[in-house]
Image 1: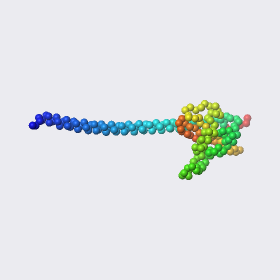
Image 2 (image 1 turned 120 degrees about the horizontal axis):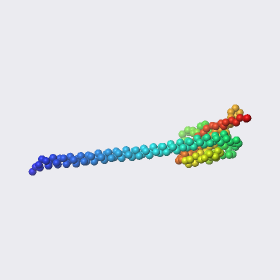
Image 3 (image 1 turned 30 degrees about the vertical axis):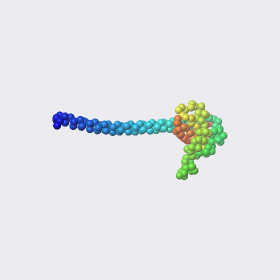
Image 4 (image 1 turned 135 degrees about the vertical axis):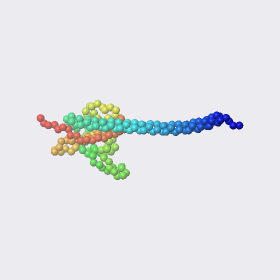
Length: 198
């Protein structure tokens, strides 16, 4: 017995509809997978960028604190009439190269396996020494503490060799830590204004 023609068309149409539904489901799952992968990648990238921005902010905070410590030391040297002897008896006051590790010259570092050299004033032992024996920011000038830091910066002052042909000059090394773990070491030379006799 043969089916009427209209029923045969309906059977072919329902079979075609089922095939289309299967392909639609497959395409939907494929698109959903691609969107999920793109979303996860975007979240990871955003998290990485946030960490980079936080580290950069912390580094800038530490750099600004070290700069402030240098200015604080200069202010102290400019204002103070009776500076202590730079013989190491008072913390943070040294003669040139008496304070270990503040030489600007590069020296071999025996702990580096490849035999390379490091700038001693950036050496971790030097930084630790400056952080314990250095002058605390504001201790000599009574300026307010810097906000948002894990600890206040410190500085060490070295008196350069005295020569009659030039004024007294000091080398200042400042060590500052940011809010988290960024560490900045800055160094500069400072010659206070020379006082003239009236």
